[in-house]
Image (tube, rainbow, N blue to C red; front, side, top):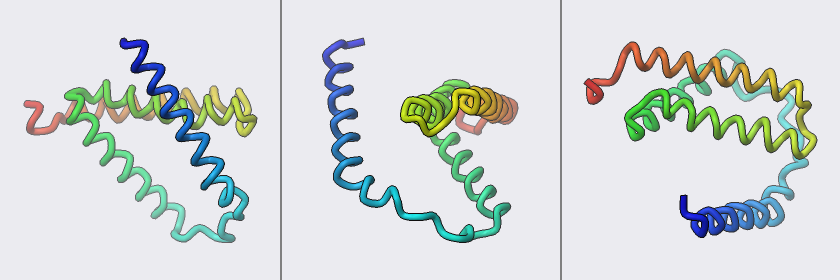
Length: 123
C-alpha cells in the first residue's frame, strides 16, 4: 500500500467527516425521532433487507466474489456501528460483540446463498 495515499485518504476522510459533523450533522442530531414509524415494522424490515441485498448484489458483481463483498460490506458496517459507536460511548462493548457475531453470521449466510445460486455472468 502506498503510505502517501493512506495518509492523504486519512486526512481527506477525517477532515471531511469532522467538517460535515460540525457544519451540518450537529444541527440535526438532537431532533427527536417521530412518535411512530412511518411504515409497519415488517414493511420497514423488508425494505431494509431488499436494499442490503441489492447493494450486496452490486458489490459482489463488481468484486466477482460474494465472499469478498460480504467482507467489504460487513467490515464497513462493523466499523460504523461497533468501532465508531463504542469509541464515542454510544454502544457498550458487550452490545458491539453481540452485534459483530450477528453481522458476521448474516453476511456469511448471504454470501453462502449467493455462492449456491451464482449470477448468470459468473457462470
